[in-house]
Length: 335
Ligand SMILES: C=C(O[C@@H]1C=C(C(=O)O)C=C[C@H]1O)C(=O)O
Image (cartoon, rainbow, N blue to C red; front, side, top):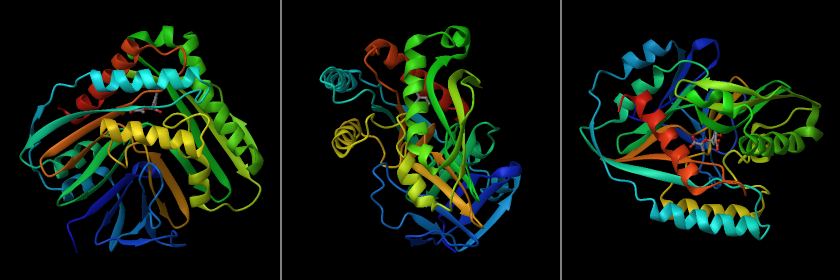
């Protein structure tokens, strides 16, 4: 056994826990369990990680197995708006030139930890309740852990489920979100992109747009389900869907992806932030979008957050939305 560990909230209130060492492979196994971990650009040729041991357990049991280390003390650095303002300006220019309709820059708040955090963060993540789903990957040098509200996909046989999750407000602004044209437009970019990416795979049903409550923060949510005409591989579905315009550019081309990657790198986004993170158990797959989490390496901590930018977006509002998302993550981790 090694000290590496992965976990993912599963169906029936269980959590899938995998213990390393992990064997990295290109294809998911047809039986048993494997985790899917990749970077935002999906550049890893072997994204499936087969654990030496795995269990589907109650979250409390998984938390207990992580021990009882204290939460670390964190000194956060002040986040400067200058770098983001520069990127925002470049994005609005690109939108005006017609290169993008929408893209999603990522801002990173940094901190320094006193007293290692990995296991304590993972325990916190596991304490979450639906619709948030706990996820994480830890080894002795670093890792990430979070509670994501967003599924990239769930695949069981020929039933594919996904969602558009975009458009954000504070809980107190729930009523005004429901009629906010800019937020509706931002959401519809995502929902319609999903419908057009999946429409040729089978019979697609788009549910109604509704407001999803996540405590201090609310989002527009549209469920989408496809009865697939034929068996589809999980990897090809991930590639078809990721990144949706909730995290990626619209239109999604080699050029728009590489521009987004440059902005993400400049602002210091961790490679797996916003990437698919998931698992397969006996052929059933659940893949999240890795957001609302903490990333650490040694004593360095990162808290990334992204925001959808469209023509109608304004810098101050986006900056406020990024703070809202980070504060929600801090609150969930008790930081
Ligand atoms: C990028 C994030 O969230 C995504 C972006 C959203 C938006 O722009 O409204 C909403 C939910 C997520 O799809 C994040 O939490 O960092």
